[in-house]
Length: 303
Image (cartoon, rainbow, N blue to C red):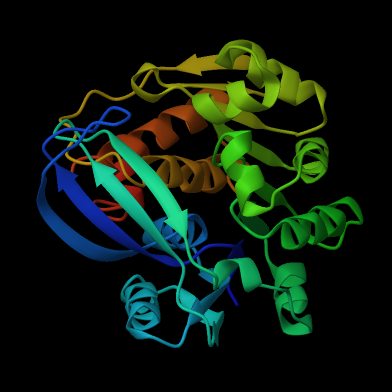
């Protein structure tokens, strides 16, 4: 496998472009619908492949048409899918409800990803990688094993995305104990504002500093249109978001995380420079529809 291995979700996104995002007990009209490959691990791997990394995915899909779509998209982006297994249950999915301004709501379901377990071949690939990425959307047992491997020095670097608020994560089977262990051992810990506030019950700037005290070497908390906060032991910076015409914000966080891995974990950019690289990647991906609508190349990030 490649120099970066992404472990976790590779799913089918069912995207509905709505007249409006509904309030509780409200409604909306679906102007159009599409199906595309998605999933945090798969999106991050594709974004890293676009940045010329050898990227691979460890995941689990169903033996169905949706699984074929997932594999075809990984192949299109040049991502190694030899670690993607097929099972009898249906491929996991997300329902992406996108409002007219590019904002969205996401609901996940399906049984293929929750059934993922690491194999000996996976562990060998993880040991050979320059960096391993995972998120709290991966099965809790898998995340805990990756954290333990990093703590024991069996993998070179671990990047972790908190991905969502605790009630959602607990519904997926994630535990606070595993998240705490990731915060203590990750080389990069990423969270969006909603996830960070749910986990630490504080504002993003305080959260990024709190996470740094828990052991993670590098921490980033994104705040949407207000950019992101990044911190190491020695430095805390705020990087503003890029101003673009947003078509679809789906996948912006995954593009941001991939660019941080590229620039800050396996690269040697400063926190401020890495943050600028990551916000540029996220902004560019918002200019087209879909989680992988406009993933940047290295040349794009030098503009």
